[in-house]
Each structure stands twice: as structure tokens, then as C-alpha cells.
Length: 310
Image 1 (cartoon, rainbow, N blue to C red):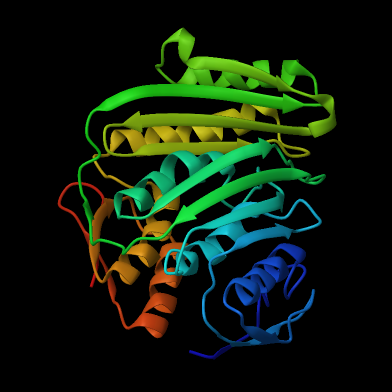
Image 2 (image 1 turned 45 degrees about the horizontal axis):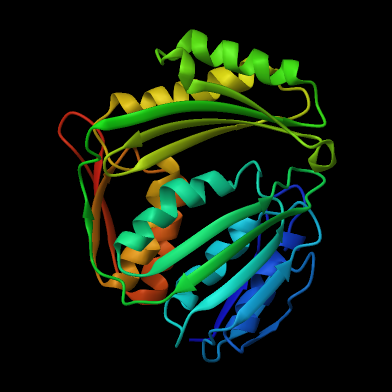
């Protein structure tokens, strides 16, 4: 179905398509044997003319620290409907603020996609931190019909972990993050780990907080940024994981908007989550425009929301 998007990122400091968004559009054109008018850095309007999806070996390099996760999520659902397996190599950023980091894709999102029928395997070959980039991930996608699922109960807690990673920065930064997180989280000492990567991969810093349940693994991430202290980063991430763990819901705030599209393409689905974000509500609106599937958000008695896609 051809479509036009206009006013792209109109209220952002730098409106229009950035390099990562353009790479996502170009990737969609390549896997779909499609064309797109207006596809250029800074463009505020594009018109997409779809073709037919083709399974193949693909390699997409963003050329900046732009999000490899964003590009993958653009092409993943179409490739699940291709006529055979695909192998995808993506180069750019793997740890980006305001987009899903590699660990979220690998441990939170893709395992649930696999439970719906397809088989998606993802590997981190090289970290890529903002602003340098240089990361690389590889993905193998084996299509299968998407099955409707219900994710209501996350099950019992299995494991928790906190990992502070630095590259070309002082390990003291990671130590301070772990100390600050440990002061808030009632987790065992052996749950906290410091990792120092090769100098050539930096500069970069990220704090990963992980809560693995029987049915789902939640990953909350704090990204090292200029003028944000290690302690502040750690406290914010810790409070977010605590907020999720206190409630009985299945999906955290970031997973919720990621589940809507595969459920819509499966025909229906259901899960519980925290208060839906504007991202989730926007995704629901776009999904309805394209597929006719409706995503309904209803408060649950006591805590959280029920989300039904039908």
C-alpha cells in the first residue's frame, strides 16, 4: 500500500530524516524491492511505493552512531513474511539513548517474537557507542506465520543483574554507577559486574539493569552522557527497574509499544503493561491506519493496564 509521510520530526531540534532514519528507509526499499520519493537526509516528506519482499543477505551501514536497532525494527516484520531465511548485517550504534539497545532486542523483545513462531537470532559483533559508532550486529531471520499470543503473567523472578560497561573511559565511572545502583537495589553482591572494553571501542559508557522472569526479561538502560553524573544515571535506571518490578505486569514501558505491531500482524494478541506511553499510543494509531487492527488500553483494577490487539 503506497503511503506518504509529511512533517517528519517537525518539532525536533534538527527536523527531517537523520542518517539512521534514511538508512531505515533505504533498507525498507532494498528488502521490499521498493522505491521512495524524497529519501534524503533532512527531508521532511517521503512517499513510499512498495514492491515484493525478498529474502536475501543484506548489509546496511548507517555511517554514524545512529541506531542499528531502529533499522532492524524497520525491516524485521517484513522479513518475517519473506519467502525464505535472511541474514542481515547492521553497522552503526548499538547503545543509543532514546532507542532500543542491543541487549533489549536480544533479551527482551526477540525472545517474545520467537515465541510467536519465527526464529530470529541476533549477535553483537562489536559495540558501537554514541557519538563514534562503529558497532556491528548480525541477525539471522527464519520466517514463520506469526501466532496470536497472550502475555499476561511474567512468572517468578529468576535472576537479576547490573552490568556497568566502559570503553576508553575510567573504570572509576562504572564503579560509581554500581555503588549508586547497589545503594537502591536490594540485590545480591554477585549481581553487580564491571566490564572494561577495548579502548578502540570508546569512548562509551552504559549501565544495564536486568530482571529475568520465567516469561520475560526486562532490561533498563542508563546511557553515559556529558553533564550527567554516574550517580544520577544509576539512580534513574534503578528507580525504573524498581518501578517495573513492584507491579505484576508483563511488559515494561518500552516493550509495550514494541509488542503492538507483531500482535497486529498476527491478527490479535493481549498483554499487561504499565501506564501506556505516548510512543505506545502513537504506534497504536499508526497500526490502525495501516492494518485496521485496533489496540485497546484499559486500566486494571489495582495496577497497570490490559492491552488488547484485535
